[in-house]
Image 1 (cartoon, one colour):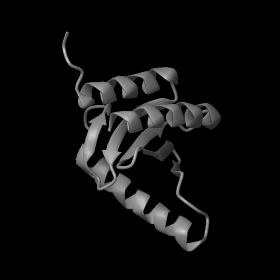
Image 2: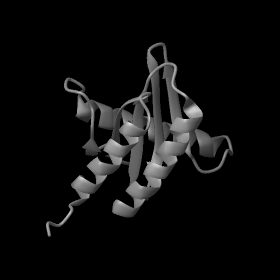
Image 3: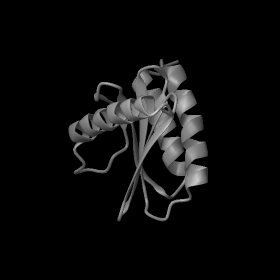
Image 4: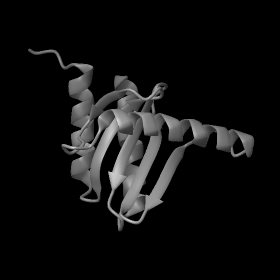
Length: 124
């Protein structure tokens, strides 16, 4: 029986997350220092840039949450005219990032992402 690698396990989780909602256009697992661990981004999206932006937004979100006494950071949410970017912690050193359509049903996406983040935390 073939051994399942961490990358295979992460890709399976990301595939399941994407399949759970048509509103999730792409998703990835990024290390807290900005290195791409796994993704299902479409061709043409710069993974290095996305990893760096994820790390920068995460750091700013953590600082903001701490400085304003809001407690530990749970998620970062950015809404643009054409859609949203949602990031949440996944394990000690990972971040689950999802690109979502502009009319996404956020309650369901947050629930699905939370479940996926827990699975990712067990893998990494």
